[in-house]
Length: 349
View 1: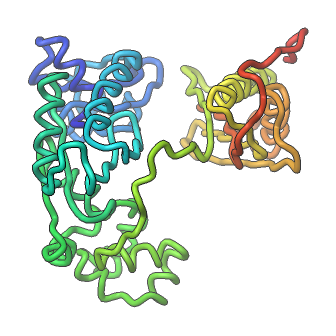
View 2: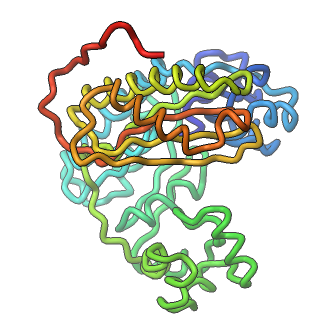
């Protein structure tokens, strides 16, 4: 989908059309941008940017708190369209999915025709625009979907894949982060053609296991299947604070609260985990993570909270002001636990 949250807001509030819309937390409360309209992107605003920074870049921007219930409802409508075409759907976010349309309910042999139909149906049913990428594997389809946003359709047939990749700027390679792209730029690797000149040992030395991945995809090779209903690899919750925290007791209370929410979400998903994860972002935006594994599964939100508190002691929280805290559960496996958790009283501080 194109600037999904912002597009929903602009659709429902005509006065916002053509206006730079920034969906996220308030700049006054140290919020973060979830997404923004294309009008705001022209000013350099992007997702995950602090809202205060977004306001400096785009002072005329209209800030809107996210309304996730509305966005989820729209997402379900879009996924229903996909389900009418194929059961092979791998939803990767609220507004993005891979579809394998080799076999489809229409019996059409053209994936491009199906993509046009999907975009048409999305607009008819929701009033929102979507961009689609069509190719013979997931990597190329993902790149193609971003190539002509917004409201675009890009097709990369097998015989044109290498030419397309050769011309692609290194920053456009899906999975290649900013730091890696800068590293390659410093080596005068600026395009897919340049990247393809590097042999496997060099790429493995530069990027470790990811080097094998880049070696394959720059040659148009990606054998990953579309995996419907893939289970989550981890479950987490985090909280950004209006004012930096320095009180360790307050941090412990928040961690235990987050842990209970994480565990309840895990129960709803029918999974349990063996590894507790902690995320701490300090006032200078330095982020640290800590993990602790269990031989047995973590059996309650209370237990997960205690592990998170223990991990907190392995950080500089309390010495340095904390901007964000997060708790996660990983090493997941199916659970036979009932669909609720009994809290124990009195609640720990």
